[in-house]
Image (cartoon, rainbow, N blue to C red):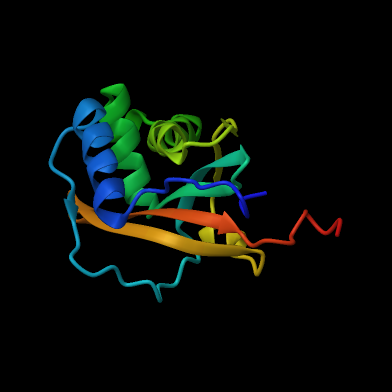
Length: 163
């Protein structure tokens, strides 16, 4: 798959720039990247939105945050009061952020790839699996909340259990 194909995956700085561009286009308030991500976090109970990138390169772009942060994202994106935002709107907003950042990453890959529809789950711990490897992570603070963007790659030789 990628043995003879060169893909151009973003560095942490490039991913942070993509995040900033998407964030400033759709949400109020500055998103401030952390200098050093803390990768040993407990993901239980945090929400995750992600898109899959597949084709000549296979991976995922994920956005992980607390329920409060996801609610604030939806509130800003849809210009609602905090009490008016529904679970569906929270999922739509988090999925859309993943979709926009993932679309920019897809454009950088430099290979023939497709982007999936965004998906959202309520427990980010459920998505960590031995068949994926984290390549790049950007963690940032926004409105006193931690938001994490990671690019994951499916390990070579994993075909969804069909080897």
